[in-house]
Length: 183
Image (cartoon, rainbow, N blue to C red; front, side, top):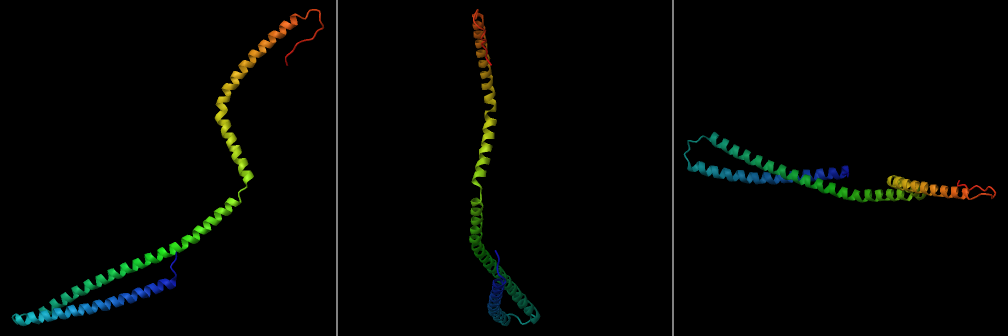
């Protein structure tokens, strides 16, 4: 969001010229107002007693003129400030809008390049490994109980087969010695 120095210079000259033109306009209006005040004061002075000193009248006129000049200057300065702020906002908004497209395109291109460079096989292996680890952690407590039940049943079966083997050994009698074993 940059405003070129040429654009800024041109805007400054434009606002300077506008301020000068507005000041000339206000000066003309002020002169008209001063002339009207002078006519009114002269008229009042002619109708009133001549014993009012000319210095008092001149000071009153000067104060009125100063007050009007100050009001005109303040009003002009306020308008120029507001116009300048408005122009700057407009230029800044235009520049931001122009740069947004460029930045958005650059970001989209870089993201798509990065996504294209992803090693799918490596990513798949990492995701699979993490998923396996999580499943093992989740099922770890459940499998402990199942292993206990399996071991109890295995012990019961072992005892049954051991008992059957002992029975078969007792029936052997005169036959050749073929031991029955469970390894």
